[in-house]
Each structure stands twice: as C-alpha cells, then as structure tokens.
Image 1 (tube, rainbow, N blue to C red):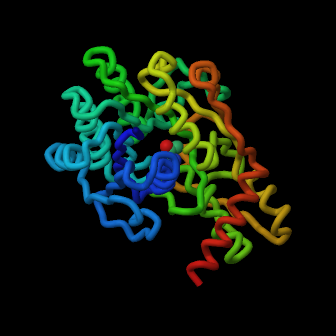
Image 2 (spheres, protein in one colour):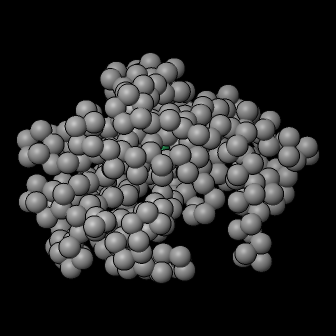
Length: 319
Ligand code: AKB
C-alpha cells in the first residue's frame, strides 16, 4: 500500500512539482495537496486538495485525520528576501508550521516528516568553499536563523521523541513551472524569462557572486530519495548538505549568450547582495552521498537548455 501523503505549501515553487512527482509515484489519491490559498493549477486539482493554514494546529490535525495522513512534506515557508522585510512574521510562520508538524509526529498522528532547510543556515563566518556538513553556523538573516533553529528542533524531536523527521539544506532552486517566492537566488530564474522577452536582464546580485544552485528535478529527486531511504541510513537528523552546481551571475549570463548572442546582462545590486555575501559559494555533500546515495544530474549547461525550452513552452501556453 502506498503511504498517504500531505504536501503543505503545494502551490509554491517546490510544492507544486513535488506533488506531481509523488502522485506519479504513489497515485493521485495517495497525495493530498494543501495550501493556505486555493490552487489555480489544473494539474494540482486533478487530485485531492485542502485549504490549510499550517500555523493553525487544529486545522492541520483536521486535514491529517480526515485523510489518514502518514507522511507530511512541510514546504510552506517565507524565503530570505521577503523575510528580511517582515522579520517577525517570517519567524512566526516558519517556526509555528514546523512546531505543528513536529507535534503531529510526537503525538503519533503521522509517521514521517520532510522539512526543508537551506544554505541560509550558514553565515559570514562559515568556510565559503566546499562548506562542510558540520561547521561554524552564524546566520545573519531571519530566514537563516529560522532554518538553523528549525534544524536543531528537528534533531531534538528525533532524539527526545523518536520523530522520524528528515531534512535537506536546499541550495538556490531553478525551475520554470511555478514562480519562486522571494528568495535571494531568484535572479537565476528571472533571467530566463527576461532573456526570452527582451534580450537583457538586470541582476540584483553582482557579477561575481557565486552561489550553490540546483535544478528542480534534482531537488525533487533528492527529496524523494531521502524520504524513501531506510530509517537506519539517515544518520543526520538536523539537515543534510546538498550540492548541485555553483555559478556566478556572469557565468550564467555567458552560458545564456551561447543561445542568445545579443543577450546583455546589467548589474544593480540591492539588499539581497548582503544576504548572498553571507552564504557559501559551494557545498560539500559527501555525507548525503554516503548515507543515502545522493548524486546530482544537472550541470549549468543542461540547466540553461532545460530552462529555455521550459520557459518558451510555458509562454506559448499562456499566449
Ligand atoms: C532563498 O534564496 O531564500 C532560497 C534558499 C537558498 O533557501 N532559494
């Protein structure tokens, strides 16, 4: 029997693709999509959907019991850029939704939890290149502080109450199906839409800002891999480092120019530059490779090709 799964934040950038991937794997009816707002996606509405405010425990428990949910993927969060504008709201949302899902695990309503962490847990004092799994972590953003605290709570609930919670530190995720929601790495998505529309893009990060990035298909693959790995394989109960590719805005622009020779990139760094400067340039994910066999597939060249094809096909559909 496939597990009964609930995706919280199913209308978001990761949630939307994760819902479809899990429905492909386990069947439409096994995967309940949920979000705080109604879905406008035709694909999502082909399976069960619930309106759910993850910061409301009673609402959360009602949906879990109604569908006899066994596994929750808790994908709702306020990302780094937006969180800097609304610090208290971000802390409240990111932490209350995590506590609610951890308590559902503690009270044995559900058996397994996925909760995403981020490279934002690292800070300016962290070694920047090939950042190790265990290292100095002094995040300077609200989002990073919430993710770092969240990691400690995951490890605590696992150790103290035996909650089977699993987590990945996502790098910047690149995808075209659903727009990203207020992150510092969003430039690496906006650039494709603008390159196709007008051959030019103004990056809000400076040309030499290298950041760890990953194509969405790799991220979905990693998420499902860690959740389906044997319990004994999961040795890290805070969160795993995960690496894909690392590149700068200038390198991404150069790769795009191979497809659009007239493409021109301008640079006007804004408040997100300081956030990006506090994050690693690249990540060492040896532990994820050893524990549950992680390996990424997409390099920069492949990402650019997939994104251009994908964005073009989406724009045709909306014409
Ligand atoms: C963000 O930029 O906030 C996210 C992240 C790296 O977690 N994409």
